[in-house]
Amino acid sequence: GQDYVNPRNTAAGSLRQKDPSVTASRNLKFFAYAWGYTTADPAPTQYDSVQKFAEWGFKISPLMVRAKSAEELIAHYHRIEEQRSALGYDIDGVVYKVDQLELQRRWGFVTGEPRWAVAHKFPAEQAMTTVQKIDIQVGRTGTLAPVARLAPVTVGGVVVENVTLHNEDYIKGLDSTGQPIRDGIDVRIGDTVVIQRAGDVIPQIVSVVIDKRPADAVPYEFPHTCPICGSPATREINEKTGKEDSRRRCTGELICPAQAVEGLRHFVSRGALDIEGLGAENIDTFFNAGLIKTAADIFTLRDRRPAVTRALAERREEQARQREAASGKTRKNVRSVEDRNYEGLDKLFAAIDSRREPELDRFIFALGIRHIGETTAAVLARTFSTIEELIRVGKETAAAEDPHTVFPSVNGIGDTVIDALRDFFGNERNDDVLDALLRQVKPKPYIVNVSTDSEVAGKTVVFTGSLEKMTRSEAKAMAERLGAKVAGSVSAKTDLVVAG
Ligand SMILES: [Zn+2]
Image (cartoon, rainbow, N blue to C red; front, side):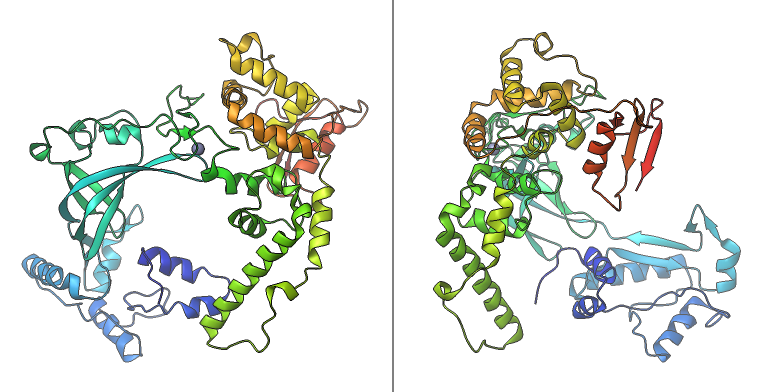
């Protein structure tokens, strides 16, 4: 009953399932058209081999023919093209193959491609329509993604109403390297555009029909603030290339509802506050029930026990209803929401309370500030020792004309991180969220208690992969306590690599 957008990905994904009953439930069908290792050829020719498959009970494509000339091949290509929309399954072209298997072997392969087979693709189907408006969607990581809303049009049997415009530069007619696309013509609201479905799925704008551009059409002005939360939306400079990121991003990480769920999931995740029992599913439930808006709300859940119980009960009820609908069976006893009791709740509240004094590096990482991963969070914790000091320096850095006059020079902290800290602490709207959180949580001051006589003291260590006995962050912390320097990637300075 479910519709899948991309048949190729769906089929491949179904076959990769670990549970074969899931694969079986997907109702896949296939035409047999080739074979792997055999001790003898099924038949001397491609065509007869495939006919053999049919004798053996496999389905084969009824469209396969044997042609005697290039003209016959092209004629058949056009015959299939005519039937294409009535086939009941998607195809993107035909494949011509040399029929004699002996000849196939003699012609062989060049860089993995057979010289005895060639694909002849159908042209992507195109249609003309108009851009009615441009909406900005905010992704879970804060990326502002423009979408063109089109007058609905049918392309290749599918009604297309939306098409992604990727980013600001794409709308202007430039690709990610600054080269013109669509002859450098920008996309405006009111424009007539040619769209196509490339390959098997995603529709895209091929060109703008400039002759049909309304006289009053104006260049699209990409917003510089987040349409959801109103925070500034900025383009970062890539430190390595010195180029601007093509995507504009909302800087209101903590306060942006579009990013909130993702931020909350991150906050409770393993490398961050690691709150047991408060996984992604519960975060979603509490967020959707309006019980958690920002991280501070997690710590007051205990005070709102009846509402928490109700949210969990409603989720279970909904899940039970879905199971009923799927199986056609009805439950015998339906307990009312009020009757339910959640023994697990006390455990959950205890797990939350046990994280009221988190390690400073975990807390900094948990804030989900852009570009601040576990390693950088640990460096910041070591450098500033307390959250209050980090906030103070962060705010001063944000206010300073030149951040380098305020922010100390720290090994492992580059301009990308300093800019991210400026965005974060410079956004007044983050203040309230952080204040509320710090009323609930008291991060421990970071005390460096480094031994100097261990075997790894003074050495630079890199951890990769997942470790068996501890998490990577625990291993890092341990190595640092033993006086080692932990780096994020292997370089000339690396003494030891621990591969998980
Ligand atoms: Zn936002």
